[in-house]
Length: 166
Image 1 (cartoon, rainbow, N blue to C red):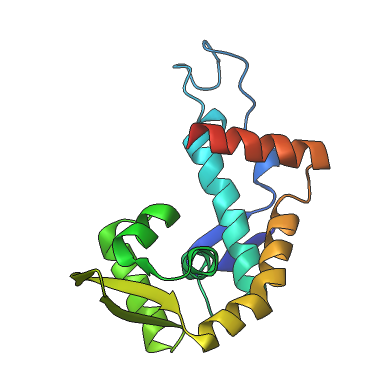
Image 2: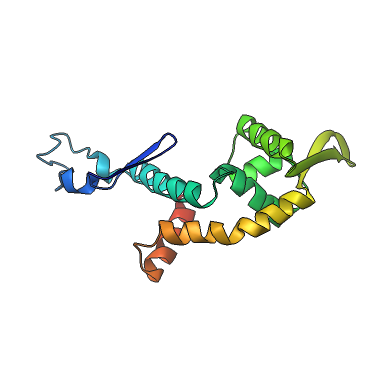
């Protein structure tokens, strides 16, 4: 059995060979019809784990979430911390933690919003912009490697379907 460990993520590459196959709602394997390996949440988590391992091998000093925040700031420019979190799908506490960590590394900066002094605007520093742009190709490689078992048509379909259910 080939097991890869990356931080808290463990992938078992031989797993598929030992998992019983479901035959339907009255499946004899489970006796109750619920087969974990057929559940969308479980499958998404396993796919994310695959992606996270590949990401950490290619981009070792950022998390996928930090990279996503930097990507969004590249697209949006200066934006409120609240909006940044919403557009990346993060809760308030996680957004603050990511912004603080990237800020401590000199990759992000914050400044008062001239239109609303209560709000902080977050943007990439010059160093952060350069860092993201120099790693963007690696980000594309992560996606390509994650979906390598799929055909081009299957990759487009997967992307379309995932967008549909979010």
